[in-house]
Length: 187
Image 1: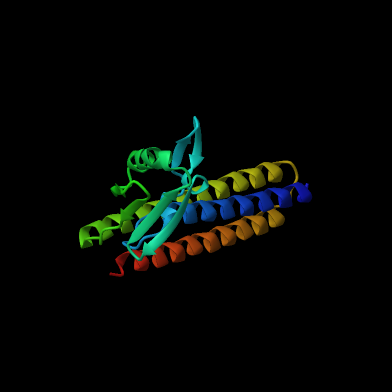
Image 2: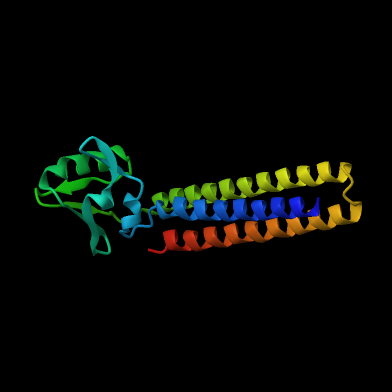
């Protein structure tokens, strides 16, 4: 009975880690006013009828702190790349010179920075909701096990262990959001 409970606790910790990983992935896509190739992660290009990530059909790099360059391996892909970037609705306009695509990242206004901070906080709150949901599942399991003979003292100890874990992960989320907020608000 206790081994099964430990497995559930390990699974909960794994789920909490996944929530943190997902938060990192979401925050990579939040613009900070600086060019980053992460902005293009998740954008798929129609490559011979198959959706393919941009970095698998072109060289993606940074020309300077505000310019992303995309050089396709096949020149005929330039239109597909441009279309995929437009379709991703990132709020940026690619510039095609026939050889490569340049994406100029405009400086962010104060208002736009605040919008991105709000978006980052929203992602942080989603991560915390995911963590709390995981806590709810494991606490339900502990209550079920308690009805099946788990001692009350052990159940209380495990509940406290879960709560400490949730508090730790929630504070990690807060720190991650705080760092991202500073990054966004830095001019």
